[in-house]
Image (cartoon, rainbow, N blue to C red):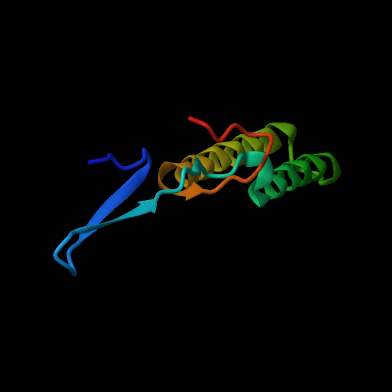
Length: 101
């Protein structure tokens, strides 16, 4: 008896006298997209730039407040990326990444 290929699931069906083995290949997927491939990073950078510009332009909006908001945005972005990576997977077809494990 031969063993199924690595990375596949095996299902035995017995519609006839002899069992028939079907191999269903499983996909090797990378974890979520890298940060530079998402729109989250674009909105994060744009928001940080907007906060820093507002600190320069608006009277009464001090630099320490601006940096506090930038820090809060950074923590929020890091949490959102952590949650995104915690349980979902995306198939990465980028030839620059190594899909072999």
